[in-house]
Image (cartoon, rainbow, N blue to C red; front, side):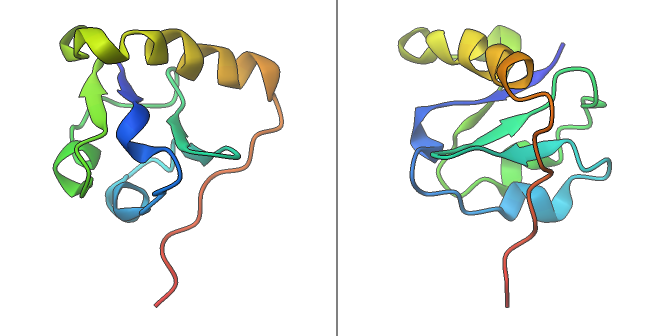
Length: 90
């Protein structure tokens, strides 16, 4: 199982999830954050840290955001040199 980030993250990009990720597998795209499917260790630390409830286990993704399963997977194919997201600046 892997986690994905869905529509509620669009333009918000809070980065609370980045701060708690123990393996730095969250990357920043133009409009949202993405979780790398092969780097994620399924620890679930990111999900409760998201203030907009945008993170879901792949199998628990709500129907209205199922398209984000493909969007998240494709992001890393289309951006092989993606940059790990940085935590919020204080």
